[in-house]
View 1 (cartoon, rainbow, N blue to C red):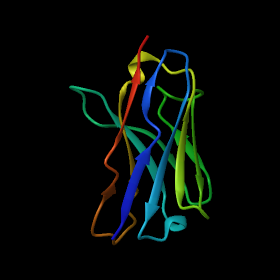
View 2: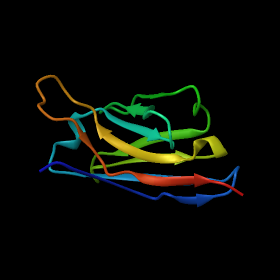
View 3: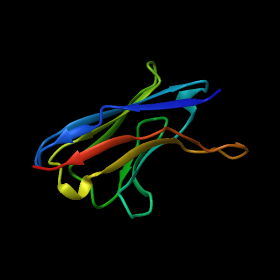
Length: 118
């Protein structure tokens, strides 16, 4: 059974930092591209960043230069370091195992709340 479990969310002041983690089990983690998404109240879920199995990263323009995605294949864990946080970063953050060709299911975590407020 594939499981993705996010942690590390919380309340932070504008300009602050948080580090999210996504622990993965039940799959060969190192084979997969991994994604972070977020969903703010009343908005559609939006893509934030992705990291390939080899560590190549890409970011949404809204977070480029402030967020850093990384992974530890030995620990089967992905991270999202979020710096210079803004109120508009407030959302539930989700990790996703990016489906490979032939995969029958799309796996997501349950989400972790990030609130940026003074």
